[in-house]
Image (cartoon, rainbow, N blue to C red; front, side, top):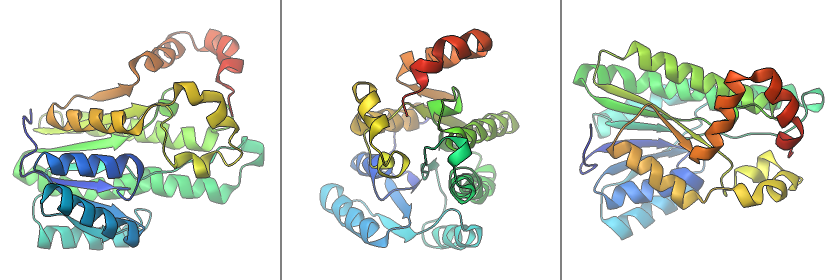
Length: 264
């Protein structure tokens, strides 16, 4: 188990805002070197400046669209040359579009799979050989409670998060005899700009506002997971009860929870 983040190199995708940004700031204050990856170079540049001001650690960034596999290979090659070994990979990049499937656009669904699933796998593919060679490392994949308990009007997004959990669990088993940790983080709805794309009507946010998690709190939990790794982090814990009940009693849950979960 990793007891300190001091001098650890932590790669964070989707680092320009939300959870990624907050985790980057927090790990830097604990003495780690965050490597920031996201599409928006302007936001990355500003966050790098802020981290250097607040924590005085060496922080670098690379603009990256994780859905572009060639770009992923190029950027991780640069990280290897300029920084060296990666201790932790936080696969945080992702987005959602909430629509009933009948009205959903296939290009939105394809883009979600490209970013949420294939992009996550492409980044993992780049760090894994180095971690295996070194004999240590930690891969953290941001899933969702939607990956455990699907809800109406999010079939495309839920499918991507089910895929993330399937990949995470399989990879963990493949690496069981190594010293590489593989963790899934499954949060419920979080107060971030995620919903500016996912929920353009604003109805979902309005309906679940009292259940929404504070991004600062979620970031703290992820940093703690880096220090003390475990297989899965469900946030909040009570929300995971629904997915457990659904697994045990799916038909009953469909009938009882249909209206309750139809918040979009």
